[in-house]
Length: 212
Picture 1: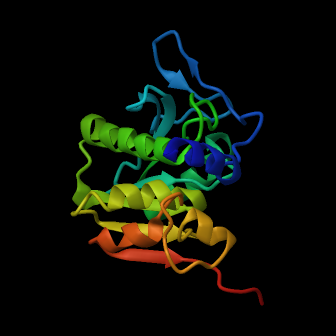
Picture 2 (picture 1 turned 60 degrees about the vertical axis):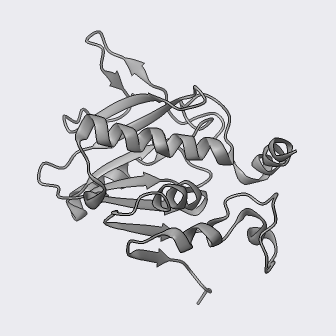
């Protein structure tokens, strides 16, 4: 029953660009590349396998003098092909590494988008940061925008030594986007309002409360 409700909820929660705004190709030397991205020696493309077997695209934007790394979970109706300039600007102005990724079913990532797939996705990306780049929790900042707040808080609730978390236009839960309920129902998705209580690091919330 839980899988059924999750599948129905996914139809209302996820809106990946259709068609995707990019594709991934492998060069003769084995490197993965994103067409349309200016050659950047400090950007690496990964194809990561998640626990259910999906292959998701992740990009690591390295700053030569970075102390911290930002794991960026993007918003709903976007994919990596639309966000290159943002990552370049963030890397340059904040002097941080940026690890970004597409959820299952977004961009060139395989599978279908769902709440639990986003959790498996961010876990695979975090494992890549640890194994391939030696990134420690103490030097990692999680950034989640909109639906990306779900996987961000999922991971943040499990890691006790993070440098920090940024929630940009985060949701309280799936149902609370539609109506201001006071309790959490078993069939709700992205129960962020419950998970944030388990986060032990500093949290910055960026959210618009009204229009001028």
